[in-house]
Amino acid sequence: DAGVIQSPRHEVTEMGQEVTLRCKPISGHDYLFWYRQTMMRGLELLIYFNNNVPIDDSGMPEDRFSAKMPNASFSTLKIQPSEPRDSAVYFCASSLVWGGDGYTFGSGTRLTVV
Amino acid sequence: GNSVTQMEGPVTLSEEAFLTINCTYTATGYPSLFWYVQYPGEGLQLLLKATKADDKGSNKGFEATYRKETTSFHLEKGSVQVSDSAVYFCALSHIIQGAQKLVFGQGTRLTINP
Image (cartoon, rainbow over all chains, first blue to last red; front, side, top):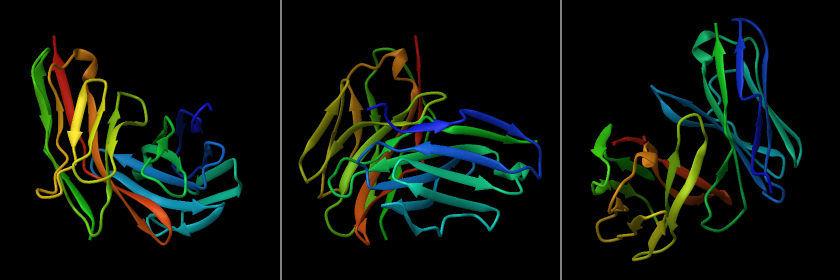
């Protein structure tokens, strides 16, 4: 398996523009997680899905953020409109239902909003 | 609630030095414990894990033992290399609403000088 695949690796956009981040989880993993990493706040869980259904979005900072998982092999995280304070590295991770195997992370998308 | 506290960084050592990064946790029940490593510009990678008390996880010369009596999972390596320079995250997993949730420490940045 190629692991968790995220795109793009880097994104630079202007304030007010819409940004879409993409993730392909590991085949067979039932859970998908979106994290944000910044120097100030460390790793923050934004939202997670089980079998394509959003379970907990309490970490989503505000209504400008939305996430979807239309099928088992694809998820998006959208920011509209983007703001400079959204600049961060966004990680996607996936995991099996049970077991002590932890998560498998993607390489992340570094977002810069200018 | 469940939480993880890591030794504050940054930590700077010389090559071949002995490494310890402290990690303690607070949890109900019997969580699994993990160490993840993040190399510059990459996502988090699972380094090692332990699923029950007294288990020792090991990988790439790193070791950590699950100590229930002291609620600790300290990371050790006998002789570090420059290539070990990275950020290290301690984490615990617990089950909430059927999902394996990981709780991460704040990360410890390690720099090894030649």
